Length: 116
Length: 114
Image 1 (tube, chains in turn purple, yellow):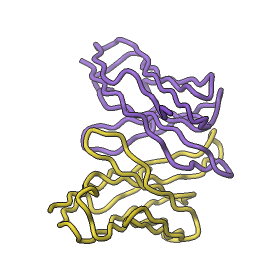
Image 2 (cartoon, rainbow over the protein chains, first blue to last red):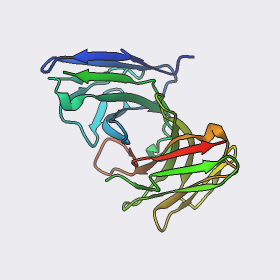
Image 3 (tube, rainbow over the protein chains, first blue to last red):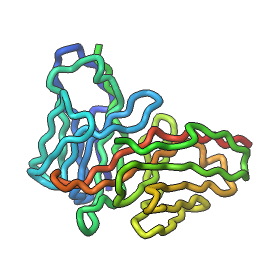
Image 4 (spheres, helix red, strand yellow):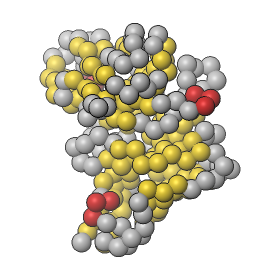
């Protein structure tokens, strides 16, 4: 049982390049989300999804796109990388309780991204 | 808007107790608590729902005061393994959005010394 798998673990990009961070879960969780964590800070929500075909923005969505074509996968695309996007990115998934409440996250191991 | 955690950091001796507080200005559906060790992903500890219930995980427990939109995490008889950064996450009901959001506080660094 792999849980939440993120790839790659490390990435260096040049300013202006685009790339996709991959996230896959094998727990049949309805809810998936992306967070970024900057040094010494908390986690900020980028985008989230409550099921295939349904996504919405979090606190810091600018510069990022998401799509969810299957229950298992939730990739995060950086459109044109900027140094301000240097961060650690975490994907997380969860079951949904009644009334759409989030049960409790299982996090992936993270992707450490540096934009130069 | 992010919930506010206090204190920002705490240093304990093994066996001592500590309390971490989390407060929000929004009406909450639930409060989550997570612990993150250095260089690792956060790990889910517990969830508290409306109704003021308390939950426990080992000797770590928490409470949720729905009226005050506050939650507290209690580290009792701390062990070396309790060291890490603790985050509260507050879940708010989104009426016009696709689903609920979980917003995290800035974290509380806990160091337990022998």
